[in-house]
Image (tube, rainbow, N blue to C red):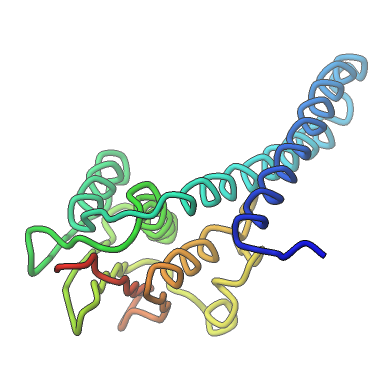
Length: 218
């Protein structure tokens, strides 16, 4: 019997994703071909089909990014990547962004693209949970041999029911959401020597705390 290893699982996941994307492309192309025959009738149904196909493709792409990143272990500077992500969202977000850190660089034991994906998911969630004028604050500290990253906002907050399930795989309250983002963030943290915690930000909003292992020598 074949021994199941992490590498086996990654290869099977990649194969599975590839084999799903191909028939999805054919399905979408054929739906686009028959849509004109309805002269605008059932437009809502066609849009629903397209939306479902796009969501499945998004889900596959997110998992493929994770699988690829898991094959490359390295280190990256959490401060540099956080600044880059905040700069990206501050241009169009119209939120009041803040950032604090106790060090100029904080090298963590996590591949760069993976860390960028983690930060981007969390900042994007904060932007979506807030409105123009709300605050989004990020903080990076080194505590007891760990990098501690906190992202808090003054947005709509999170209910107790959502708080209990928010990082579960496929759980989402967003229209068109895949329910993968926060689950992947938690897995990234856990597989790089840390953890992820989500809680209410007093008196308003949501706070996410991520701990990551430091790169050797820090």
